[in-house]
Length: 231
Length: 231
DNA sequence: TTTAAACTGACACACGCATGACAAATCATT
DNA sequence: AATGATTTGTCATGCGTGTGTCAGTTTAAA
Image 1: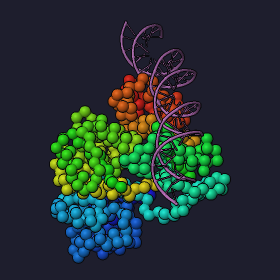
Image 2 (image 1 turned 180 degrees about the vertical axis):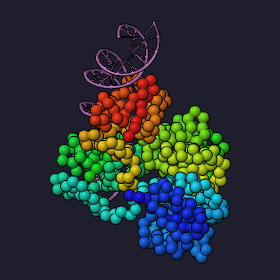
Image 3 (image 1 turned 30 degrees about the horizontal axis):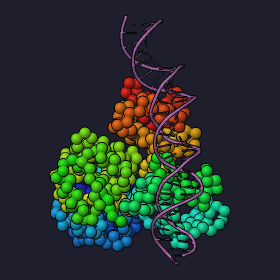
């Protein structure tokens, strides 16, 4: 899928220069020369990044940003500012900007920052409807009620820590979650239970959710690293 | 939960200044004055952000970054560079940096960027399929899940050393990576396994990913130097 | 006090991976 | 071409450490 960028800039020459350079790097570019159009586009279409000039006639970049953020909280915004003042930056940050570039800027610099920001936009899975129940295999977990249905169809009451750990693993399904990360996330930075504690929970999960707990299909252990959940 | 930042900087005064300012903004700060410690901390603990000086004695920031990224793909990294050269930035980006700041910098500027990056790190409960996967030939590797698809289409669970070495080679595709560099990067500064160890891993890779392991198309050995990966 | 949850320590086992031996390949030297 | 030297490919084996498992203890909740 192509990465889409919306560029908002009233100075035509600069706008064209940016467009051409971005297109050379295989971005799909949409342009606007004023805030009105920018808002319209941002509502109608989806972008991986919005490049927004601050100094524009009628509606300035901050105002545009502020309005955008009313509906769209995720798309990264890169500001192009003329002044290199601190107030401008704080102002922008407050309104939900993600990066700045002070004019005049190097085009390569712009391309770099675009690349980084787009990377971020891909990372965050925006707003996946968070149902409190998860199904996998013949099992089911409900994080609202702390209950689960195991392989044998039996109902299980999850304990607090069980639920926390299970959620952590399921949220990061298919990823390897290191023991360190588990400890610091599900427990705390201060408490460090002995290494065997985590295993005990995994043990329980395997009993609940694995047909053959010796050959797990869902709760894998990655030696030397941690654990991995797959559906 | 507190946001944790690891700051790596050899100049003590600057380090203290950064620490104090970050702590004033309610970050939990861990500091290191050299690459060795930095790597140790990054392995043992979890951070929301790592601030990394490029110019350091013994091991420079790029090297530290490269090693970190072998195992940790998520934590954002902010580079502090002295030179404002484009090559530096491209180099850093390749190795997985997320932002730059050129010395001398304004402390407020640093705080701003830290804030932005930490925000990103919190956003991502990455369900991320896109990033961290590499394809070549009929094969595929996913460094997030430690899985790979071999020539026969079979799924392979990579071990951590396998993943680290594989990433090292793929990151430097088309370049010859010397045995020495491999040892220093994927292993440690202290341990020096016998020469045969690396070969064993290459052997495994060829079994996984080469149709004819006698005539490799991807994992070349360069006699007297090391190995080279090409797609 | 009672009870369930959470943690700890002990032990066995299995897995990753380092090692050494040897074969095969490549290079150097004559 | 032939020989020896050096490096890499390949495999079997053993060691160390991380993990599975469980029984027993501590902690927290009712």
